[in-house]
Amino acid sequence: MNRSPDLFNVDSLLTSEELAGRQRVRTFVDETIRPNIAAWYEDAVFPLEIVPELGRLGLLGMHLEGYGCAGRGAVEYGLAALELEAGDSGIRTFMSVQGSLAMTAIHRHGSEEQKQQWLPGMAAGELIGCFGLTEPTAGSDPAGMQAFARRDGGDWILSGTKRWIGLASVADVAIIWAMTDDGVRGFVVPTRAPGFRATVIGRKLSMRASIQCEIELDDVRLPAHAVLPGAKGLRGPFECLNEARYGIIWGAMGAARDSYLAALDYSLERLQFGRPLAGYQLTQEKLAHMALEISKGTLLALQLGRLKEAGRLEPQQISAGKLNNCREAIAICREARTILGGNGITLDYSPLRHANNLESVRTYEGTDEVHTLVLGSYLTGIAAFR
Image (cartoon, rainbow, N blue to C red):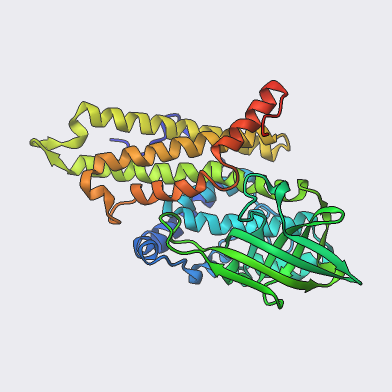
């Protein structure tokens, strides 16, 4: 019996370095995340104690060069995302918010002073960052943001509200995007600045082992050098979002793989009508379909990773990857839960937890509908967002 859902020997397409990096992350997940994730999820706790270890593993801003960052390739970054999300989406989301959003914004658009001040500590897991783009009334349409930054002599005065901002209540620095008289600009905001307040969003049914917040910006005064000099307009935040979306393409397959393995193991051990569930045709059909979609989704992620490493990855390809892999992953997790029967609704098993998490993953960094319209615009040449 082969437990792996890899029907196409995708591992043969990976380098020895990529395989070794994946194993390091897998071992961390097996030893640190799996024994604790059910309790963290039930208690709605993100384990801040693992952040320095993520830094020691080189996973924070791992795709970035210099400033203490690991400078790893896109595929190695994707494999790390897959393994972390096999543990839990909330853990992979930390790596994404910290590295793909906050650190990428500073690395790509910040001044040398901003890079030196923040990136080494963030790469080491000594400092935490967050990324404030979404607002209560501006999710899929960030151009409609109402947060505003006005000039006051040499300073900036920042006001507004951001919502669904990961890590904001524990962050040391926030990358806040706001409208100005000169269009959308990004600001590096120390969270201890007067007027900055982050409130944790509770009563969640998804991403419970993670932190999401609402940020209130009440006339936060910032010096002139707080602005990100390289980011003007929405292209700046969109470039960061594409980095995060790329990681999701891989991560979703981690949740799917973990759910498949949970269902496979259970079906081999659970007896019904005198034989294992795995011995019934309907169960085998479910497992075969799951393995097929995981194999296809992982191949898709790998191809996009190779394109990214070659500098040829296009935005519509990222949208295609996120749309497909999130959609298939959530279907796999739900199907895996059916094999577990009533036992599958408990935190003793991972599929329903993964499915609940993927409701958020499927929504953030662009909903199915938004990515569908991105593809529609690419295919027809007609933008149909409005």
